[in-house]
Length: 258
Image (cartoon, rainbow, N blue to C red; front, side):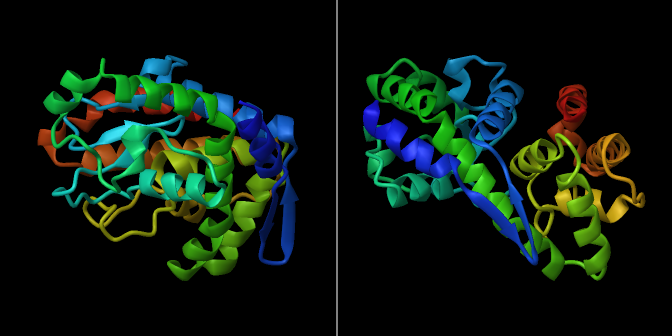
């Protein structure tokens, strides 16, 4: 794993530059954020690094449970796993066979996935994802770099959103909620990620925040607004999706933003 380590250290020493501000995160802080995301998404169970939830039409992979769509499925949610594969390739990281020759999820249904879980290809891919957790959190961190620009382009409250973003980012422990939530529920800028014309991404949280103080007050308001937009999502969701079953787990995740 020496090659992975060399690339990892380079990736973890990123500088996050947004507009006229700069935010730095140490290697250990970034690794800690990655471990928290890993626990949030998988419960620390490595077999869940490749997973397919009941009632969903796609697989979820890696520490961030990045979405991967089958070839003939065009879903409403941001498909993030192909972006991770591209990130591996840009960093010259050899991919396992399961990821090497396709941009699409190799299974069309959850049933097909379950039949393949004990295969050599899946086992090798799980080991690969476990051994490259630092690369995945660096990818999530890089995604945050572009999120503010996209959110500002999608809102009429540009100064307000920017102020709230940095209010959280400059609070002790504030980068983890931003990094995690943008991976968890996205930026909130896609029209397809709406129920009843209401989104549930980072943008919607920042738009709803109104305070000015940094620190504990900022993180508390972020958590409160996150729970509000997620509850609104569930209330507005199609009943056949049964999204209310996910809300307690979502709330527990938001509570890690203390």
